[in-house]
Length: 510
Image (cartoon, rainbow, N blue to C red; front, top):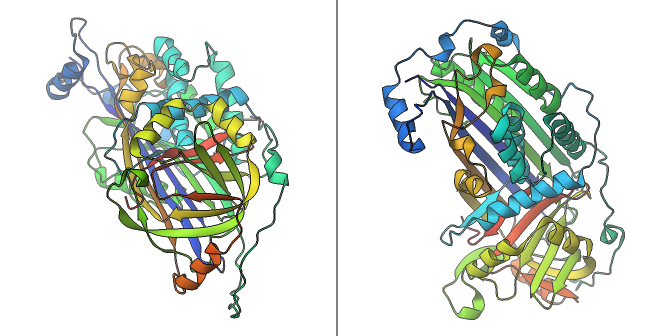
């Protein structure tokens, strides 16, 4: 039996979208975390139970650790910086309808496999998950590569074709003026908002500038003298901007400080700690990927309109139990979609960049079960069609403050998508991560992959709620959405059709 050093893939995605304007409405998506541990082991051919084999190897490993193998040219990795960097290759920004649809369908497939009705929310970041998959694909070969690619339903795309496409799409996502797959007709339209005007003079506060920021950063932390493939490191940097730093996981204190410092910088201080320093003696690599998003609403929620209202997690029509949530209110010209046959309503909350939108979907008489059923029906093609078919209408919306925490074990979903060898010590092929001298000597496999989200929606300043409620009630609206029952959220970068966040909300309180 051989020792197997652990490798950890860690994706941290932070979104903070807020409105610090005079109306004081703030939306913050605090944190998304993917953490996948990758182990390497030489597994006896007669082993039939991968899980039992993993436990046995963990306890009985006796052969030399690969970190003690002869130092190769990759030992120079210690000179690389772990600071945030940008891709260095000439990978032009490009749109890719097939690949963006694959990312969206991957999100919907994961949502379809979420059957838990007892969670407060089930939110995740498809773009963040894709960032980790891209790094896995960069190091995968053979059947493992084909399975990872197969989960994206892209067919047998060669690595030399796939990665420039993925990198170009990511570059376009991050571009100030992204190339557009299509132009949404409703973005060029407007409508009239009729509001009741209060006789009392409203105090006007200074208006702060609207902002939008979207960053993706990747880093690879490797155990010193680990025989990692220099080409893997180079391509990770050139294609995905991944910086590399050699560390000593046996010195947990300093390594923890280094990784947490990177995380804090990548997330603009929203997440200060991703590891508590309890590294296994066999840990040899951590790969981190972060997404940070901050944007103001194009139109802020109505001043002082927030008030406690009932929320029905099992639907209001069923007479079930309700609890109070702080409900924000807005009457505005918003993109709206309604399908009478299915009873689905969807409203969009555009951000100030006019490129990113949070879409909220609700079936008629929504409930936990109806939301799960809706998730099983959605596809990228269907939702893109719904978004393209939206029209701007004078819409009154009640939408709750949210304080959510969601945790998803992606292994089960990945297995259902056909990604199986990645989790099997005998069959996994991640040889592309290792130097030629270590290929087939240090088999790598993923032992677990978890995705965590912390999302909050806040609004400050609820003084004068009664007056504001009157204003909302007297607004002449063509459409109405009352999010007092379970709903889906879909935060999409419209020019690329890439979903930044997606999932179900059953209890806005978290």
